[in-house]
Amino acid sequence: MALMQKVRNWKISHFVRKIGIRFSERLPNFLVLGTQKGGTTSLQKLLMQHPQIFLPTCKEVQYFTLNAEKPVSWYSDHYRNAKKGQLLGDITPYYLFHPKAATQIQALIPKARLIVLLRDPVERALSQYFHAKRHGFETLNLEDAFDAEEKRIASGDPFNHQKHSYISRSLYIKQLSRFEAVFPKEQILILSSEEFFNNTEKIWRKILSFIGAKIYPLPGPLSKENAGNNEATKIDPEFRLKLKNALKQTTREVKAKYGIDWGW
Image 1 (cartoon, one colour):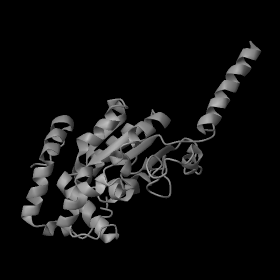
Image 2 (cartoon, rainbow, N blue to C red):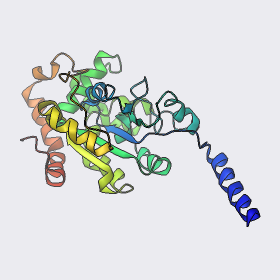
Image 3 (cartoon, rainbow, N blue to C red):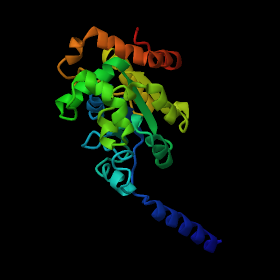
């Protein structure tokens, strides 16, 4: 009997070494998948103030995207300073859009709770463009950048995929379907970005309950991080209508499936 137990223990330790995980390593309990420009930075600021929650010093760890080739120990190292009993989180908006992230997350942390903030798809796309422009990721003017998107992404350039995916990142159903295919629905919380900002207390409590954290008072007023300079308010109405037509089906499907209504 003792010999059989030793064999079982050896097999377990061999498997752990093979996949690069040590028993002492800690991995996230929850992930905020996105969407980009949907309020994830504002949510991060709130979660960082909850005593039961630990987040890495960098907002976006990008383990399942830009750093997918690194060992699990590299990922776990981001949580080395977490206290015993704290819930660990990873807030990386690129996870929602990246085509391989869903299956990679499920393979490593299948019990993880997943949070998604969905913003009006037109406003989100415009906000991403102006964000890219401010940070030097975009050199084209507004209309040229949107016209070039399809060709840029088709090029296979990872930079284009991450930084120039304005319309593509607003096609929420395709992105969410990848996660819903590999995670049970009770592990995915899909929220409206607008409600997060307009009814923060309610959404705050819903998020804490979802990840299993103690209800903690909302730590002060919610600030809109990375909000830009209201550039989107100056958009040509005809161009905005063009974007609405391109994203009309997305808004209909999101309303039908998740009950989020952007009113257009």
